[in-house]
Length: 136
Length: 136
DNA sequence: AGGCTTATTGCAACTAGTTGCAATAAGCCT
DNA sequence: AGGCTTATTGCAACTAGTTGCAATAAGCCT
Image (cartoon, rainbow over all chains, first blue to last red):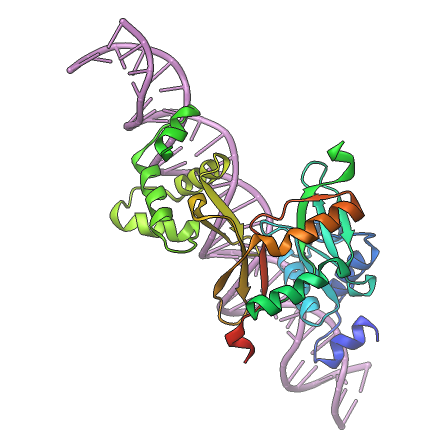
């Protein structure tokens, strides 16, 4: 199902602004921030407002079309759901983001549930540290 | 070593503002946010500025006197280092914060290091989910 | 105790993000 | 195609947090 159809199904409308935001996310090879999306669009269409970008991201997230990762300190990045689920390893030195397979954290989910009765939601976790290159 | 001594040792000074911020953190039974610290102080001493609170927390964090936990979305809370290390389980429904023993995440640290060559810094992680009560 | 260096503060101006509201336009219905 | 409902937008005013700078005061040194 296309994004337009998903929107319409829920009573929402497809607009040029939303189309641009979606194409910025789909076009980005990795992760993209709200600010980056805005800048990309602003070059071509300066009348588009940053608040529209934030509101659209909020909506796309709710509809499950886009996932949000908290990179720490309230910095968020977005990526298309189609590109699959994974966690993020962020290097404190070089700033590069690596993808961490979901499976690695699965055992911990069970442990927390058993020991604490707490069902953790470990989707799109951001883990800081130092990458191979920077540890040399 | 007292906080005053730690400060002085590094060439910093103890001020009434810093004393109030430290006592707010030490006095709080659990975690406290910058905003909460400010409000506590503001009642007695309205001339104290919020920027002083932020700057002091930054400094105390650097000196290792206080630890900061990112509760997601850029909301931070602080607590005294003396009270020990642990992670946080935050319930999405009731908002309560539970402490998660460091040991639970230790095995994952090893796995990430072996598989990705990435040395993760899993201190004071915030994990969202649903607590025992709210899962009933 | 008083002078002096310089860390610290409060202030004001700034940033990124949020919210309420009137104007606009998506797209249904005829 | 044109009218109509109402979701969406841009704007302006707001929030929480940050930063530069001159005024202040901590605490060393005599």
